[in-house]
Image (tube, rainbow, N blue to C red):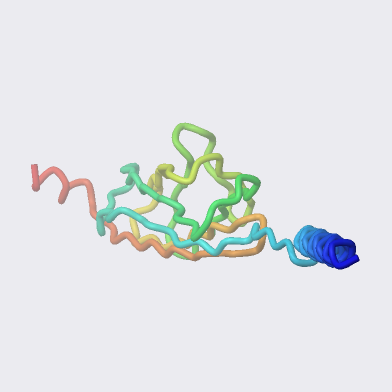
Length: 154
């Protein structure tokens, strides 16, 4: 009889332990507890650029997007606005960008080329933003350098 009671107690203990483990497993698999982060803020690194530019001269602008995390479906875009002087901004050898239009960026490290079409100083801003609404503003300002000054320096 004593053995029968010990067997029942051991069986009841094992059964309780199994129920407890199943409860823990079910609780850990609930969707509410699962958090997947997709939205990561980012910084933008820009290599130094010259301060002066002559008409019809171009400047290479090297930019790197540095996100705090990595979500493979994040899309990045660029738009720009020139508020002083005139010039053309383009990605590698593509057609020049139109001000205030959005353009997709396919790489996190890329180069833009700004070509001056003006004989006065030039200022413009570039906004880089992602598919989650995070945005960074970069300002550029170039003083005018006349071609004659450029020839004298050579």
